[in-house]
Image (cartoon, rainbow, N blue to C red; front, side, top):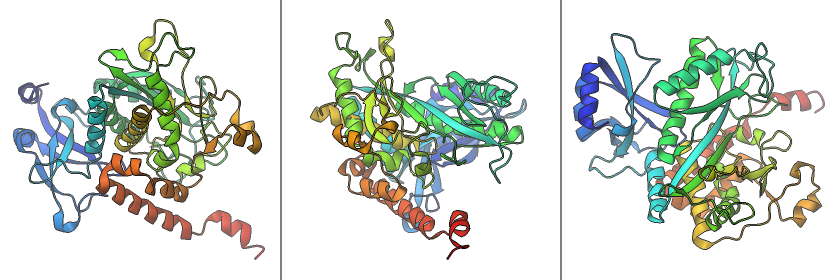
Length: 440
């Protein structure tokens, strides 16, 4: 909608409040609320706020920020609205008081990298698959069901929660492809239809909020924690991605044996070469590395394939007449990442491959989990970082990650993750007490 159409909609439909949304560098949603009377001023000049308390934003001596709503993100929040008072939301771009984009804004980071793709002639599309768990509360991991992959009722007791979540998402203009029970007990997935990357990052933030809000209404708790339960699959966010030139999929080549263009092959090679460097951004928590272990469908080994789901990058098989669906699936991210930064890093890794024409190694269709170390060395298959500390080391040395995020976000993120690792490192866990106290 245009500004005038938004004003008219607000006036004619009793919209009383507008929530202005953005995220900190870790991907946590932040918001403040304005009344409908303040909307015109917000769209023209933005709304000032104190950024010194936002993770990764400004120091206290440079704290003034301006949030300017993006008119393309106006949507009614169905879970906050009543017949007498509708509540809308708009995502914001964050600016300095002088009107320049704020370099610590994750949305700006993604927009800056999308412009680089645009300068090369590309539009970047993504389709993430976010998995999550339902628990009876946020106090422990008591499950709702013991269902498994694609199970139907009565084992899948969360069907109503997924249904209501999909209805709310669609009311907000977010298209859903399908939903189902996942592999682990009480684990679920709702897949969003692919979109241009900035819109999809906004949709991902909205998705996580809606999933949690619907769960709250049912008196349960939804979590995107990557590995909440030991011994079962963790939650991933497989990211399907493609580049388009106009309305043509730049990844498709009808004459290639894999139906992949040179651009697609260079892009995959870029993802593989820079995978270790960008893992801190796609898997940013201590807990993320409890998921990235062999044997639970989480990819650990840096390779690509078509059918093999033990690889980091998978290329779904081509279906005749579905050229636009040609894509690559990057399987290591988890749903607790910051989607703006994660999409930006995956894109830049792929673009580096295209710019420098990285050679693509042969696909690996063997089960890498079952391979010997000697066989993996023979195929030159490396592993992703095994801990947050190792991921920090890889990212900190990466010119690509620094350039993708910009100095401000890069330095703030590295500092935040080092603090998180130190807190984890000095924590005495229940495992240590149970294992060592009786014998030492």
